[in-house]
Image (cartoon, rainbow, N blue to C red; front, side, top):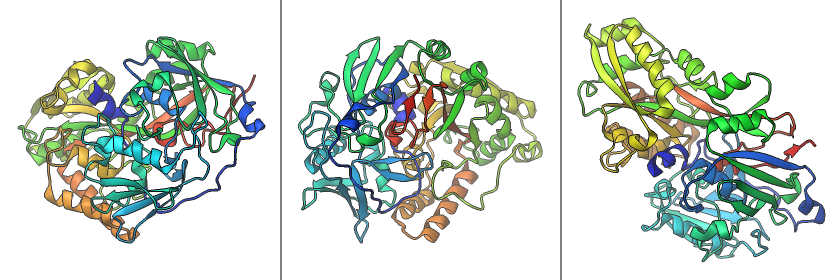
Length: 511
């Protein structure tokens, strides 16, 4: 389960790299900033399980519990652009083997203690340590060599193993909230110190969490809410009923929610959440044949998948792992659409029989893929739908890693991160068992490149290989949408995800 949740939630979101950004620091909190006059926001969360540890949590609902009271160095907006949070700027060295992160002056934790470069160093040392249990460790492994305080004490220097142009985006990932040096993260829920927009006042297991506005937040004057009241629900249906009754102010959109709510409530798009990859184990026949994999890719009606499986809240994908909000979009790659003649040509008239293995959360998509493939007359497809625990059970041997065909969701990440997890030789999560030395070289060159023209050329070549070899079909990228009650005023500036810092600035609730 931990692996499953980490797949869905951990690591950075994706976009193009920006080497430097800055904004004016806030002064000490005023009485007006401390008070907050925008009301209390009622939030619904699925009841968390296990201990709530900022460094190790991999469950989205638990991440939100932590994230509301915590802050990262950098966040990402819904357009995929980086924005400063605790950092004021980020600058690469001339050889691109180090990044200097300047901190805002006079930062404080929610208990009033200063937040310094030493706290940042201690936090990331805990993440990248070989003994680390943090899911975020995989995002920095092989990239970050060391972390040290800058000479002026107001900056942090990340030394890298190799040039990595998108490095600042890694700092927007899950589990990268800054904690005080020497802090016991395992006891965080009992002593919830952070540098976020709110202070966790009370946690009641099985019931919920209450927050009040944090007067020490660096941009406290922009936070209008006086607090947040998060209520726990046992399942999605209970949360839906709570939203319909007015008990909570928002709910995440999915096909069931869309069908139940229609257009009665305001819907807000918060960027991209994930894609559901149809993964082929390329070491097992008949999927060791590129023609068979391509035939399945050409058999799918991707527009129908967007409308049926995602209720229209998705963007069509073309089998390369580049989210639509990433700054360098591949060009010149042919667009796949349903083509029965192409399918029959690739298969030479033969009929292919196989089973798709997945879990209950992917059942709607799996059934639709089954129907579309069988409608061509070239495939006989069965489904093996497991519980999530069964699907991700095991470590080196697991249904999601070893079945011939699977459907697995992958969270919004940088293309290079997705490559290192999905396609790199030796990756623990390479369920396709696919490796391509040319693709590996191009990805390394892409992250080292600084020229826009060079990065575009490399992105095109990378996408063409993924599209041609098609170890994973990416039919659609799911949008991260929420429904809001009519009482909610304002627009969320950076979405409501860990990469956007669970940002509630400018939001209020009408009485």
